[in-house]
Image (cartoon, rainbow, N blue to C red; front, side, top):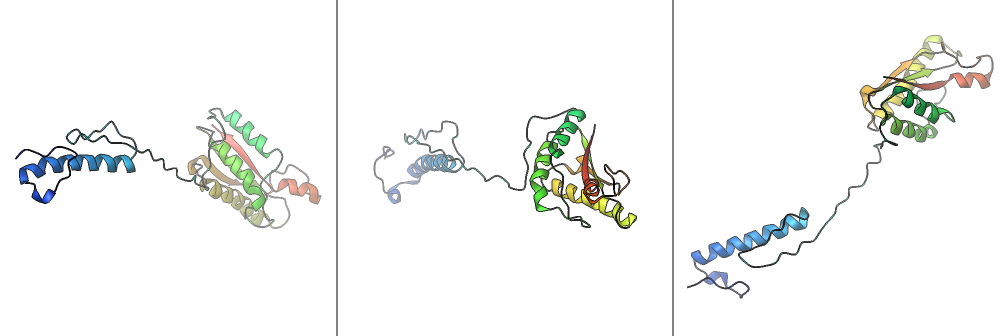
Amino acid sequence: MSNPKVGRAMDLAKLTERQVLPWGGAVSELYCALTLNLFVGPLSNIVAAKSGVRVVRAKYTIELPPKSDVLMPSGPPITKAAVCQSLMDGLLVDGGDEFEIGKADLAGTSLPLLNQIGAGLLRCMGSTIRIIGHTDNVGDEQANIRLSEANPQAVVRYLAGKDVAADQIHAVGLGAEAPVGSNDADARRSQNRRIEFRVCQ
């Protein structure tokens, strides 16, 4: 008995073992081709030659939602520390990181700026950044030093959680030893409670 022609309705129960093997191989080949194309995407042109069946492929694209906790670089890579420093200074010129006085908690209003800084840091290839905390001179000196250390550490933790390399950013606390304004008036004391970003090659 010769093999049945492709496309003819068949009762597989009536086929001999010799007939089932080539038929089953063609069916398996066609099944695999269809399965792979439906779930993996377009493959090289696979045709079930034995069965003469033309395989029509459907294209499926699965796009994963972007991670909300990961930053993307804000532009092309920067290899010079001076250029990276200018970028940091430019981002900080109209603002600064806001902290609750006497605490090392990041204020919600500072997070958009920190996200911009983090996206900028992702561009600074080969540079390390010292995140330096400063306080005014009000209160106990040792407490101010601890606070000035805790503030940049909070920034480091936040940025590291946004995929900025942990070995690229280092926290430093200087307390009240490097003021930018007089500590005699409240308005100027507030300028001394700040965070700085210093880029090193």
